[in-house]
Length: 239
Image: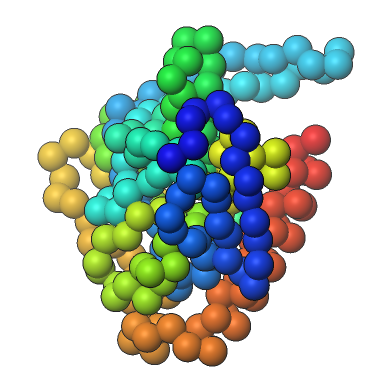
């Protein structure tokens, strides 16, 4: 393993990523969804002043964990025990998709670094969740998302329901982890004492995808293209 802070050589070839210091090869395209559960949700209000403009900084914060799977960083040691969750409303009127960004950052308060999960939700969804949080009706939050995270090549054909390890990629400079993006498929919340809801059916439960083949790879490629295009549109809207 290369020491933390050192430059890692990263190579991409035929959809595979190799990282100096790691014996594994990584691939995008696992036909399954990432599942997160979160608690400790709370409202945070405020405003930011930017370039002479006053912007509403209202958000929902909490702590999230992966449901069954693991999250790590390709080429770096350690794994996520929890993620700092932040949910913000999308400024784009009429947008019906929610964007998920997963990242790892080092801050003055946490020099060892922390995993972050940020969700940009349509205003209607954000308002509904904010009302539930304020009314004490959102003790537990669960979500599924299609993401650009990496998996080990050896885990690509892991059967649905069997845990896998997800990885953040590495930036081109080889020094830090690259963020992953995703589109939220389901977002549900329950009050305290409520039974855990069954996860909503997703494409990873489709029997036709239990053995990934050419059709599955084409389907995933189309989703990845849609994911990148949607992310770019949302970034432009946020600016």
